[in-house]
Length: 342
Image 1 (spheres, rainbow, N blue to C red):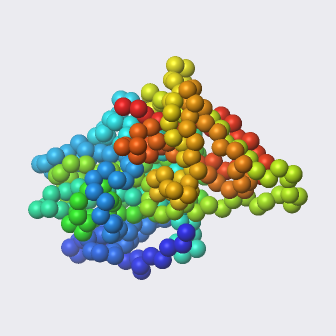
Image 2: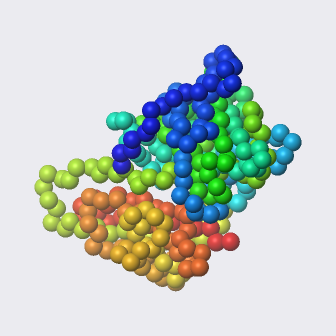
Image 3: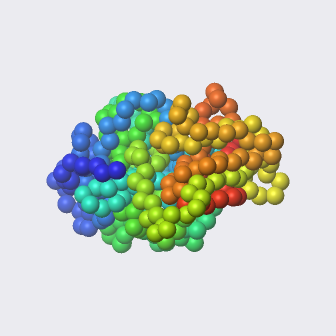
């Protein structure tokens, strides 16, 4: 998906000069800015109400008196900072889950930030932001001095060297309510090639204090930009494929089917073709067996499929998703998907 951004402009704060500092001022509609390779864009979200974005990191340590909020997403427990401990809000996220978009000829990964402040004191600062990639979803032990997370590679840092003091200024009043998003952050997709999992560390409140509730990060709002591999030079005799696996209760939220974790029976597994998280009339679905087994047959080869799960129609689809690319004539087995049952 291609997007056209407004002209990027970097704004100074009250004409104050800080060495090695860029202030991205997002306090007006349509404002944007850039620090290093990352782009920051004020986002006018459609009203959705609380809880409608699929967060993977929620920090909520401060309530008043100028306190800061910080943390990073992981499946590890206990958590290190101000993260919400529920795996519904703080969890690992795979690179493949984050949508890719093309901006001015470059492909970026798109992330969404939703902030919450008092209307009487609506300004908030994002003072630190780092992205990492790793090969596991339960890494921990962030070092605030070196900006390092063991087992990962840092791929972006808002302030990469000592003495840097770049930050982002935001205004909660530009969007009403919670759960719809306020800022879009774009990081070049090529930076995430070194791992399967994305880690995001952020710290708020250094310049303008966090004073109400929580801040949370989620996937971006765009449809994924999928570039499938070219078809084989010789058409296979069996062009269709299958996907099968088990839907299981991921008790420890590590996204691995561990011993003792049982399959979920009578769950609805559907192909979320348009990525809206809903089971639409034209989307294929199946029901898991007593052991949690599911299977989709006669799938068109050379395409990506996103699978989601519904265990209770009143709750809607689980925020966990499984993205699979099916080659021509390929039978993919053991495509297990863990969901957290409260």
